[in-house]
Length: 323
Image (cartoon, rainbow, N blue to C red):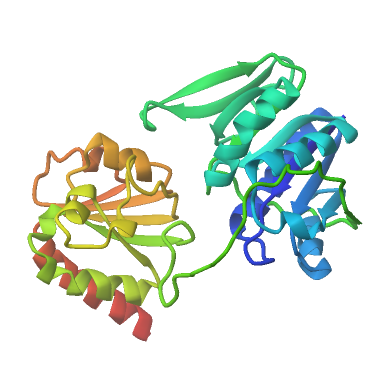
């Protein structure tokens, strides 16, 4: 019996999300009185793999097949299933991101496992196996009981603290035998966005809505983001109007993010938008309407015109940083 977590890498490096997963896996293993194992697929150097051991896993399996450098859902599902069976995994953990959401259903079929998607706390109990998750766009929560012998969990980003539990984790580098024709994904070209912080990686996000009134009024918002080392974002109406690029659109129909700090400036707080940012640890809202729905989701609120509030925020941040 073990807890197996699949740790995704980005250009051979792990992100904070990876260490959240490993911390969570080690604590679940502790609750079950078993072992936490990390599974890495792709080109990752030993010194990077060793970092996983700082967060409680006892064993690290590194699959180094060249054919698996690019994500192929079918191939990855086959490999992870094989390792899960071999290691006797009764809990399989993935990130609740695009990769995890693609792999979890396939793994569920292969392993005949129940799925708890987007969990944000440790299991409430082991027998029965009950997990906690947000539902209805974060407006409520549910206690989900998974009755299958194998359980698959996807962990919501930024929902679990990093817990360092250093140990000498053994690293086992292996290659696996793949079926002929299993891999169907071929990467012909890679173009990366440079020069700005990616929304999905940002710890701080400064977002604007129609309350900004015009695309010409975004200067102070961008300046605030630059001072804070933050990413910029926007609501759907703003991207639909062409005021900001579509890749900045956050919400249920855009990017779903979970930064530590989210500024919602001139955003009314429609359900679809809040659904995409409700996992933020802190939300600061600025709106002229004191009854705007966004204030229900925000921990801090300022009632006022963004055109007047933003320059004051910029000045306040600049003053703090100068000290």
